[in-house]
Amino acid sequence: MKTQIFKIIIFLLVALSATSCLKEDIVATPGVASVKFYMKNAQSQDSLVAAPVKGKSVKIVVDTDADMCAVWPGGTRVIMKKKVSTDGGKTFADSIDMFNHPVLTNSDMYSDYGLVGAKGLKTTLSNEGWYCTYTYTKSGEFDLTIVATNHGYNTNEFKQNVVPMGKVVVK
Image (tube, rainbow, N blue to C red; front, side, top):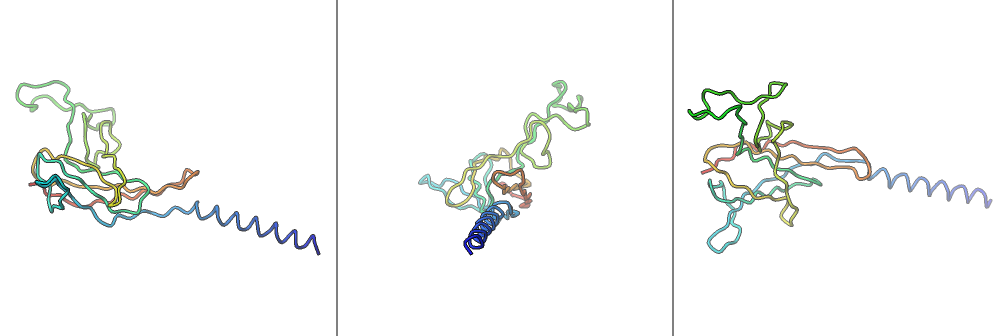
């Protein structure tokens, strides 16, 4: 009788420890609920805006359930030139790598992901969500992309979700 109770207790302990470990191994794909833009008002407080203004710092806040988040605002793409030309870059070609991709000085466009010089903005977690600050240097429409990532702790499994948020109109 004692050995049966002992075996049942051991079996229950093993079963409970296995189920608690499995919960940590299940990694869900993160979602992005919304993106909001804030700019400083006259009282130096964050004010919600519909569209950023060129030359002024904008705070991009991402509402997501992800463990990590990166923002690709798409406002900068500078291609390295082989030589500096006197006519504004029309006569000399862009520098290209061995795979025929342009060599970038810097870029924050997600379409350049994987190329040297391309990177998204690092974000910080606050009570509103993940945020970063950015300054658009020119007016126009830019592709905003959010990369949300959940990862399993103590494993190499992670789920990444690339969410194109559409065009951002900068005044």
